Length: 337
Image (cartoon, rainbow, N blue to C red; front, top):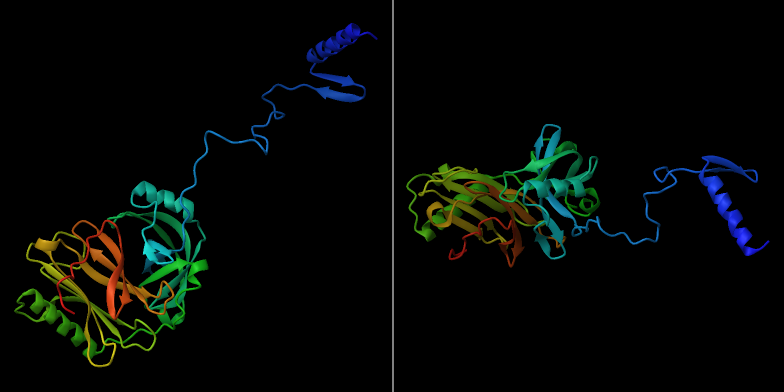
């Protein structure tokens, strides 16, 4: 058969097939479909390069420290900061309502498990159920709500620190053993506050106990004498809100490392008119970086919002090692220990 005849026959076959929806060819059914049918795949080949509508991945997220408040059998958690090899640092991708919602979508899922800590020890677990946004902070944060399970000896605990269970299992190896607030320890906080007032030249005519709004005690490391932490607020409240010009606050810690006597190991005296409002309270403590000494998480109340900071031990004193980028710096410079 010559070449021209072959081409003609092939052309005829194409015409016949194109004119029929179904034909039988040598015992095989041939079916034609339009391009919109399922024979045409929307997927590119496995080795094809995808361009155009790709979304770049955000920065990877390391372990995150959270703080939480209990509400009966439930609790809410908010992230404090990311845990890095050299301490805590701000979490990228939060700071607004939209960013916090995106953070929750990317990193928080229903059923996500957390380990809870109080007084430097593991005290229970938390299971995430729902997510929202907490706008009380100057840096808006995502908020997680869920169910908690606590060990029997901590039934009275109302606030705690937390970390995702995978990382949390490596933190907080101590036994839950809160330190009793003895009269001696409470009086220590009063003596320290009076020394601060003397050093800054503030005369307080009344009983300094009247302005003490919070006192806590804990052990910064196993076997150590208790650390005393106290907040004193004059003409103001330990809460977010406007402060009169005459208001001031003192946040202090006191330690007795050698058994001689307590001394001030951290002081933040803040005058509302000169420094801006920043009333501070202790939240909890935990050995976050695994160096054998606890870090302290604190909340600071401003006039319009609040922020979070942490303190760590350095040379016998407490020093700030993390603060929300939007928070005011402490003003302890110039005060002797």
